[in-house]
Amino acid sequence: MKPDDFQQNRLYGDLACLWPLVSPPDDYIEEGEVWVELIRSRLGPGRHSILELGTGGGNLLSQLTGEFDAEAVDLSEGMLEHSRKLNPGVTHHVADMRDVWLGRQYDAVCIHDAIGYLLNEDDIRKTFATAAAHLRPGGLFIGAPDWYKETFEDPTVESATNESGGIEVTYVSYSWDPDPGDNLFENLMTYFIREGGSLRIEHDRHVHGLFSLERWLSLMEEAGFTAEGHQCETNGEARSSCMLVGTKR
Image 1: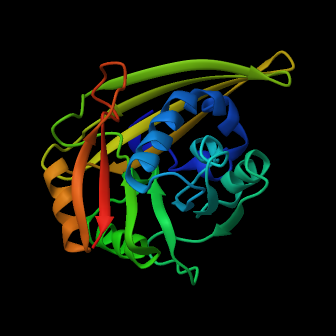
Image 2 (image 1 turned 180 degrees about the vertical axis):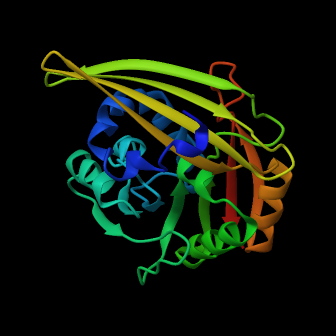
């Protein structure tokens, strides 16, 4: 099977039911602590209002709602079904983070690794404009690309097995850069699904943007933020080791 034979973004469509077994919420506890600490360090005490764009299955959000009031946006209804179960007190919106308008402003706007699905600078500009429009003056923006041009490791291979309710899912993830001259990389996923003594195998393909940290920060400044890269502890791994942090001017 060639990469082009993989259907795209199935985890957010017909395979969304697999999400809790591919990425269990408990895997986000440590990362959630980093986000809470960062928000508190910039905004101070209090139950701040936050908007998460591209919330997906709501795993990171579930680590924040104990501290903050939240709303959430995502394109995938299947993923939001998971988030609603994890975050029952949160209002969820099916919408595109590039152009959604909810009619209010928040203390913080967060985009976890969904920011990696912005494939060109035009989409980044639109999303940063969305974030700025939803922030009060002095509000906080946080984004967390998995990789930057300067940190991407080709190939990156990951796998894990999780089981729940009589279903076992093993996934194998292969990330590579088929054309180092552009701003994209691919993540090819294979899911081995065991249930009732049978094995089913499904394939999935995700395309992500790959930009330098300097370019991300430049586009944030252009959108009206005072921007910086915030280094965070990730067990010594290059992936997700730097967050994008901006204050709305």
